[in-house]
Image (cartoon, rainbow, N blue to C red; front, side, top):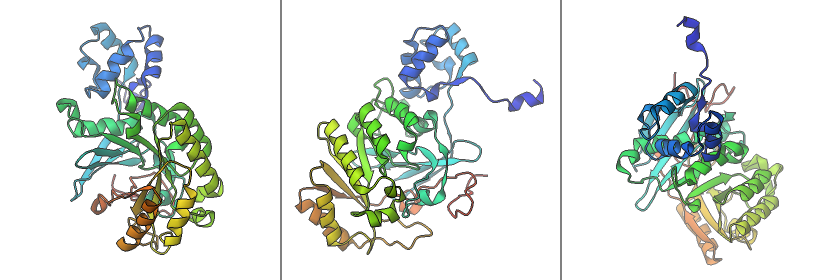
Length: 369
């Protein structure tokens, strides 16, 4: 083969980018029966097999055709870190200039995988490392679901059939609702009994409040919704979550109420990073009670996790407890999220990865040569 042929892009279809519907279309397009999609999805996502020759219930001629027309490519692991508390973080390469981070949080009764949807983030939330980093591009379906595949592979699920990942939260790098089509297909695989078979309530999409996409999410799927709220008035939220200037608090809450109604009254989770002297007063708690009135709600209070370049500080345990007590007394289920993985920068708001060429950003990591 001539040397210059080595650099030609692989134009074969990546089956890792396909949910059941799109894979059925692929098989019909190459002259095969649509049911082959179910077989291949099971091989990839239930058995971890990504070599066609290992798919033994496919005929030899079909396997040979697939080698010629298709491939199965997922992001590769660059580094792995494990926290003192058992949290694990992986740095995954998605292209020559970009890497993303994925976090697994084991608990006694569950295991949660925090999945990224973009390389970087354009939302610029002032308390979040990814927001300071800037945005490069959306992740493909294979790069999103590949985080789930990779974690299951490393955790030996494909061999043992023991499910360590019981919950998936789209709370990693990026704003999921700005990559809606790819996130939809990845969610389809998370829920599909042929793939990961998770219950809809065990898959959560987190957003800062991209209202048109919230409406589309409500129409197309029934997974759990989490809103990054963090403030009880528009003036403060404009600073903490700049998108609030386009989609203000009252509109985000109205869209949240509609989402809950469409899911038969299932609660919406409101995430609230508690910042010392910024949003942690008793008055803030009382205002939050008023805002959430009439919306089936759960609140996650998130102690601020330190990142470079900000002056924010974590609220005291006493302030967080007082805030939580006010919400609980008002009948709002409220959980104080215990920081996990802080020693490896894997806690909420700390994910960075490596995003190509973000001028002036102190967050661009050079961990990958």
